[in-house]
Image (cartoon, rainbow, N blue to C red; front, side):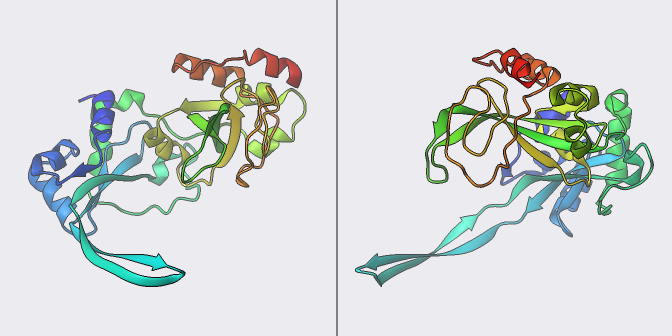
Length: 283
């Protein structure tokens, strides 16, 4: 098995009513008997091979079948006049949990906010990855991690959870060799250039991202999927399209860097306005 094949298996989660074969397939480092016992006894959280970081591991959990009590109330003229109570069955399922690290995943040999919890078969999981795709594993030698939400203010979402909300087209996960705040306060060059100089890793894969960030608290920024510029609270600093302030974003002016734009384009994203316009404005 190679890394791409294992990532494809993780993409099948969650699996309802998993069989013993399902459990074994997602744990190529274990026998079928070991996999079934690990998932169905104890906490149900099992370490699985890492995708990118040496000394890390992915974690899959098993949730047993459970029954939920459901009560639906009907209100008439401001008063409850009837209710219906019933049961909702939730079948057992395998589901993705998160990723975790060991100290040896860091180039400096020190933890960076990690809990460093022991999980079932973590040594076997890491050994399996080393044996099968060890040449694709790396150590963590970066300073900070940032999630860039690439959202389109020309395509607004209106549903039960959002009102005039720019649609998220991609989430680009980036690791940097410098602290984000130091880059922002540098001012020796345009910030997009400083970002390019500091980029260590980039991915659109949230499973890989869970390994890359380790125990750090990450930063979150928002950029325009239409032109690449930074998004303010309720408008784009580049193309000027407006949207509703959701009171979550802090807003900034920095456009996506050239390396970020190239990575997104290689992944299939198209900008309606060339980000060069935003870079020229930044310069």
